[in-house]
Length: 262
Image (cartoon, rainbow, N blue to C red; front, side, top):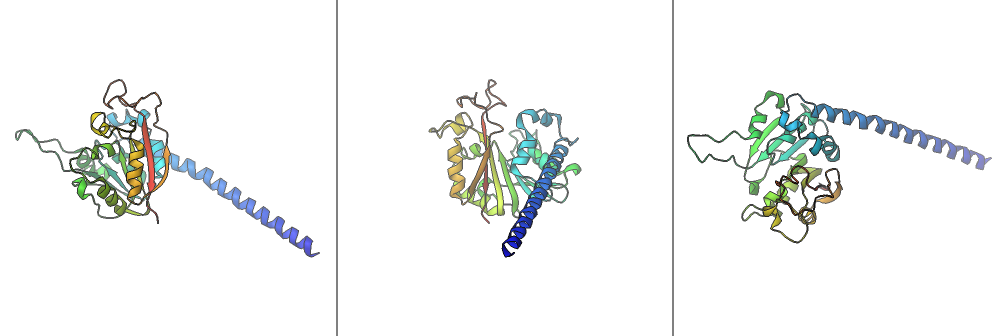
């Protein structure tokens, strides 16, 4: 009798576990499309410039948002935002309860006093009511800091440029990025792949060896979480400058995810 009761209890436990698993799978099935839908809305934002949307097929923003795990309400840093391609997308993806810090270096000064330098794109975006959750910060990268800790720090096609700043301490910079993240926060580095062995490629062809990035970022205390191959291009032999018309917008790119331990 006792053995029958034990068997019955085990059967109930198995059925309960199966129901729980099915419920989890059902929730995951519905959560993924919901998140994908939110990303699609962010990318479909009518305020995005035509020059940005024209780049979508090659930059694959939906896959980038998914890999980074961007969520509504998060604090995201777009580090060295350039023209603000990802700044605008992040702003819509995190929503009105989230914040995007667009962090660039000091604004460039005009060589001609009669012709003021153009306003940096990150300032233009931050002043646009359509992107009220974007805050622009200009700071020397050696003094990188943000007002509060972030959930995600993202830099796209820029890490190699930091290697070209004279006397720049990349180890100190990565530690500053580490400090600027919440425990469990992520640092995403996307850049052009270089063949290993030549540190000068960061300036000559604007590429970097992914192994160098991984070693430097991990040295700051980050844990490597994985990579995305979405922007990989095996046809790129890594010898051409990224601005070469033969490879422009089609370079082999790596996307690494690092996490600050909790």
